[in-house]
Picture 1 (tube, rainbow, N blue to C red):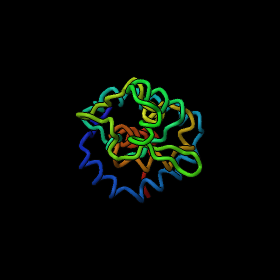
Picture 2 (cartoon, rainbow, N blue to C red):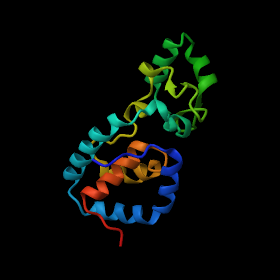
Picture 3 (cartoon, rainbow, N blue to C red):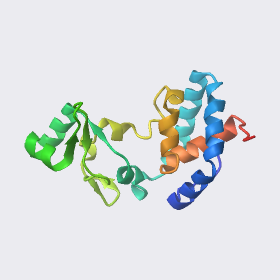
Picture 4 (cartoon, rainbow, N blue to C red):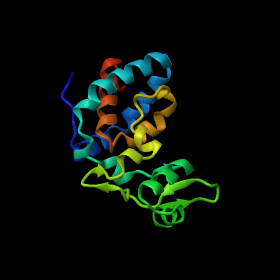
Length: 169
């Protein structure tokens, strides 16, 4: 396995220069068997994720909007010993469609690049960057949206290009 890049500045710069290549790679992936891609991505994630200390980065918590459901909000309110109304007023923005989001970026609960409510974090936080989940090809838009900000996604995608022998034309 090649060395991994964890420099957010370098990753962002490289990502900017590879936008066209990544668009071609997304198209290239469409022609591949979904299960084989899922298996390969899960293997690469298993090899790369343990080599990256997310608490030295925290970029996802610094830059992403987080969706919340009612049950998660209830559990967090209980953990924080707040009423649900107080939690909603302080931390949550509600859309007219009932969708709930944390009302700040970076996340209110990020302290020293660590989640201060880790055991009560939201499903989207638990799943991110979601490379272990099936259906990778269905999440290509989201994956490449975060390619420039998440060292795990960046390194998995770059290794995936090598393993699939992708050559930008």
